[in-house]
Length: 212
Image (cartoon, rainbow, N blue to C red; front, side, top):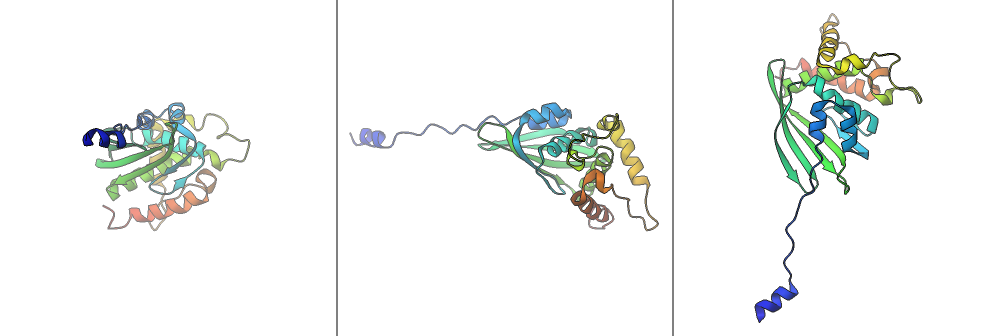
């Protein structure tokens, strides 16, 4: 009788079921901007290893460049939770192994509202940042253009969305150095002032003995 009373007063809770995580990482590794945009909420933020981006157009643009920058990236495993998922990814860049986490936070409707990319170790991460800087020099962020202007005139952006295009841009970007050996930086019109400052700091770190 007592047991029945306790069950009546304290009904068993249904087991917790996590929402099915949006497969953003698959869209990112495919490099298709349309597929990436379809996974994102109307308001979304991306925390890169360098800075935070809150313009949805920039988020889609940056995530679509990960594929050509890291063409061999793959998902090792995925941690899932009630608010989204965190895929563990790996890649090889400049003959070094790169590992990372791509945290996806979802809104109540299942769309991704927040993305955070964390990479290690330092040396491989800086190589990836360097390649992304070269890609951004050739493929400017949408927010860098005046209102009403979308992208560079003509087909300038499209060829650089391929692995070959990013590699050529990266080679051209890294081949131009000053007499002191520091790397030249993307222009403000391409990346924006905040990005330029961040990339300068990252470039200086490339020459640090602590970054191996």
